[in-house]
Length: 302
Image 1 (cartoon, rainbow, N blue to C red):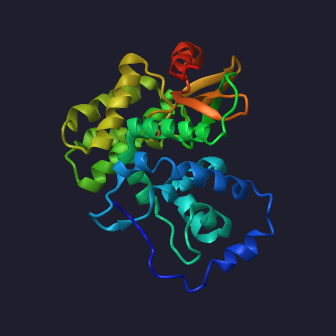
Image 2 (cartoon, rainbow, N blue to C red; image 1 turned 180 degrees about the vertical axis):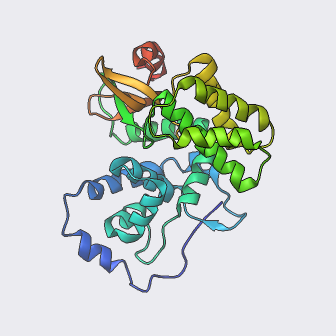
């Protein structure tokens, strides 16, 4: 991607819509947050230069626009599709992202591609530079560190073993139909019979059908369906405890002995001012206490 610079002025002039609208909400959190983010992002441009080209390819949105949209996703619990729609419709969101009033926001595909290009290592590098720049600007204070973990629910509904296998069989059969893949009528009939039953289905019957599907469709399906079959095999053979065939990384965990949840744990380190200096995302079943030493060692000395 190359950095997109808008040369033509907006037909609405010098952003007078923003000025006249936003001055009515002087204490809104986003209005107070934007100048802080702008200062920090300006100081980490070198970290972001590796993710777009200044002189090659089609013009694209600056990484700062996409990063701000991802921040809005987190703050308002939005999906990629929802945040793109919200930025186009919400004047405050559009201003926060640094777009002109008549400029369209990046679509959900652009957000997905940016995250993929950034990757886990890239995110860690950018996050580290972000924190360091924030400290230089005086936003992080004190040497005291506070560690805590919070549960984050998956958007996908957590399923028990029986319903998980039924859901997986249904997804694989749908793919078989779409791609006209070879599957014996006997196996197909058995599978359809089980997933249509609303009463409790015997686990042994489901396991048998899953193994038949794996045997007959070996090498004939796409990677996602292959992943689903592999996960179901792990559930059957190894007792792997997963709850979704959509959100592969989420897992069942417990807030307390009697309060289960399906999703993730976000392990945070904050300074005295509440500024996040380090974070780690774990699947729901992980014990964040086991990561305490590693989190402390990652903190800068002094």
